[in-house]
Amino acid sequence: MTGQRSVMAAALASLVLALALAIVPLPAQAGALRPDWVVLALVFWCLTTPSRFGLGWAFILGLLLDTLTGALLGQHALALMLASYPVLRFRLRLRVFPMLQLTIAVTLLLALYQFTLFWIDGVTSRGMPASAYWWPVVTGALVWPLVFHIGERALRESARPQVGL
Image: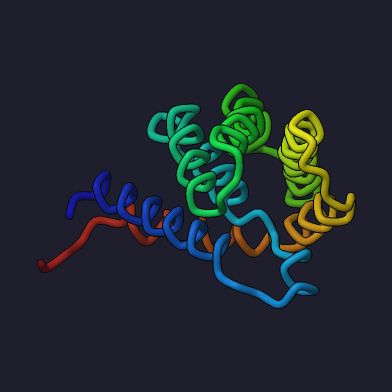
């Protein structure tokens, strides 16, 4: 595989893994603490490879997440697009942030994502406890540095030229 295709393969594998982690069954107490894996993976790939991952991918992943979770069709698609647009718009600024500032920015993006879901559920009269919306923001902020470092390593490994094959 060439470097370009292996980067895309690594990205697609991580997004499929994020979708799988989003739907894996957990106990009720642990389910409320589940980070938004799809948002974290999409933010990482929009931040590192914006020429390949943009609003179109956010929309497609959102529709997939809607169908996998049984949510209102388009709910996650809109929320993912709203969360990924600032990343695409301010990518060059975000890339030079130290990890603490980048984590704060990602926390704000996760809060925007959850607020969009909260708003849509409120408009459609599908209320849930507020903690169901805000705990994923906290846990997502805690796992973001790990997601970022694993993604950077995968990006570096997949972009390295293959010798001797």
